[in-house]
Length: 501
Image (cartoon, rainbow, N blue to C red; front, top):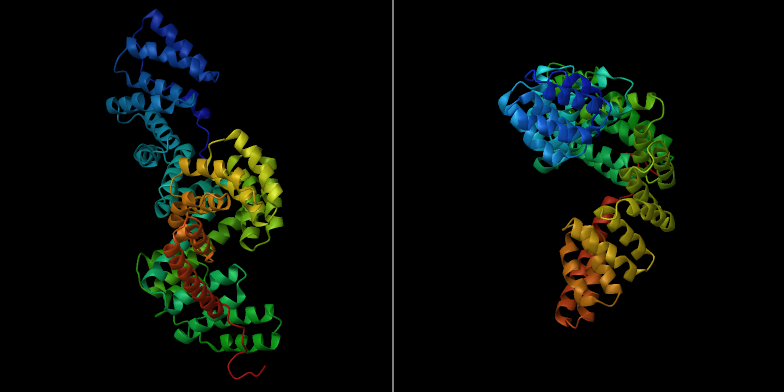
């Protein structure tokens, strides 16, 4: 999320400062400081306000103005103390509360930013800047339920702002994901969990896995609507229109929901998705959780649909890029990231996403070029350093990859992907003893057994034959289990019951 600029508020908030004693020198300094602030020369205003604060101690207006000047000139660490002092002297000081929240947020102290920003929003409900910053703080704390009403109000009050709809849609997606994760943890074999898991697999293009999960959901919940229709969709995509017709007929035969007993299904069918959330509440009943997830997904789709209806923007291209990447259309995704960057040149997050997408598309040279530009501007960025090391490693340049991967782990210790890549790089560079610790730490991220095999080889090269043998046995067991799971997951798409191929 990106908070709105506070610059337009400066002149208004400066006018709220406490009055000074009528001394010519102080009045002149106060006038000079206001002129500097109004002209955007915030750093030049700081020493003037320091002199005024020294001359007139415990003046909450001057302390707030000093904090504002410090924040707006990028000196957030120094801004916090005068802003906190201003609030102690005048708890109702909205400028102090607003800029204290903004400074804490910029310093990465989201938890400390929430209370002062909540105060501003409570006293000034129409203050979009404060509400945007509060929503940003809550999202960074992963408090999506608390952030949602603020994001929704921002979108409704600025319906042509693409960022507002994008942020709201992403919050709904996160709420759906987390609610679904809770259902999987508490009741993974319920028809509701299986149906949602099938929806997720189908959305990622994994039709065989989705088919298997839909079949299991139908066995456990034969009256759950929409499952036969989903299976019919898979059949049609696979070229079996006759099989699809059978499933569509089964869907038609299901009775309409009894709204006295299935209120959530009826509210959902009426398109009242916020009503679903209100009715379902925080219940852990699988059926209620199921409808909450579906409601969040529909609200996300509505929000992102509003985004799509607006003129092209950074956010609309980002959304399109994420969809294409999730569907493994990497070339299209990369083009969307480039379009976003054309509207926001040099944005490090967008550059990182472009590099990731190019890497996924095996365009190693393209990814390397983007990362070189990114690292020139942000040489210590942990993710960019990891990605550069990974790209070099994929081109068999292990020695060149090592410094980038080492820097990535210094900047963000514990990254399992970086640990794995550095372990591989050391091993390929003939530094097996150094590789061992990194490969061992990275094992929880081993998805295909390759890390286990690399670890066995590193043990062997380091002269630890017993550990090499144990690691190799672990690799074989892992590979067999993964193969069995894959075979089960990717079961063939079979015809409906009673239909012969």
